[in-house]
Image (cartoon, helix red, strand yellow):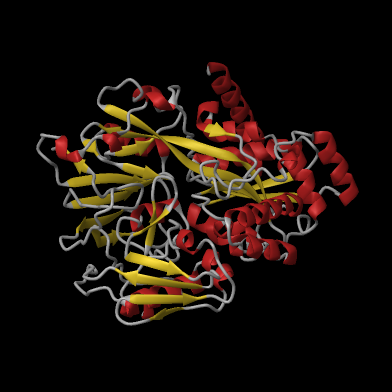
Length: 540
């Protein structure tokens, strides 16, 4: 273990010295997750029943945000901090359990027609919004129609189909083509298909809703920009009776207030945790020794994200697949993942665009193109493509070390085969904006959260990395419209095999992270790194 940390530390130090002059200015936060203990030895506070604690209960949970907050509109939410907050305010028709399976939440039940084209959702009755209004089909249809027209994942999948009211408590979705992943799409934590009052949705401006009213266990109180978001217990929350799991099942707000505080600097965030200002915090290799043997602190290991290298298919070079193949050939996934996690315990190699746990969609088709570590092949492909020393622009941010450290390692691998590079560093919100601009970048390396179905993979659609390819679109449609397990597997294998040829993105691997929590925090659930603060209590 020590040798891995020493190697990656020395490598990153050298890269920082070598490449700083080529990088634009940005805040210096380079912490990465690390932990020396086996995951099986880490206690799981979520397994401790809150009801069994006899200590006096506190009234406030304090949780840090590591990324800036460009919006609190759940339909527009792309970043981790957005989802961290909005998943505790809003709910959808479905929610993922701990196995990333969609479970009914605001939907009481649903039916799917035999041809997979018609979905009928029967809603729970008596569910109240935070403004006291009862949720009806009108609210659900308005919310989901706005969501499908706004969220990139939904827009490319649903087309012209719409959600329609059928009485006060039934919503019907009629599709032109069959879909096998509608429930999963309605569960996803980013571009969250949250249900809001119809009047809030209809009043929304292009940059988002101006009131944050949901049905969740906590209601919005205040957002002080660049400082904190304050939530409070919703006394009229209507819980389901199913067993709590992930973000699904029974929820109860066990504290009166929740404060999500912006703390983008790793060192400041951790020191604030030690000082008692936060109840939980992410842990990196520098801060781990201060908490790993503390009897008052527990470490939770959580499957955090997968890492992918996205190619800008509209850029001068990477519109040509041969340049994409050249970069893919040189990639050393272990080096990049070590730059993120600093220890093999917190990453795993994985050629699939889905987690292994997601059995229905996991595929190893095309895996011969994964993690090739072949600089000679890469150089040959560059020569065939006619590379003449053009600068390749790498888009990143320093607000979380995972982006920046991985990008530096990628830069080193590219320069080892003679590619001239430039690292462009922005604050997190600006990076997200730049990523949507055709002329602003060539390569983007970063984490992607909760890959649940192919339709949820942003880089497979034309609006993200500009994967405007007819064959890819055809195979994506076939994979998400197949009916029956055998047909789904065959279609999914064909999709992934072609993606490794077309290379909208190149898979790097999957990462875990550790979160340190205080012993006075009970019942915290993490899913994909996001906290479900319902059923979570804190001692005084």
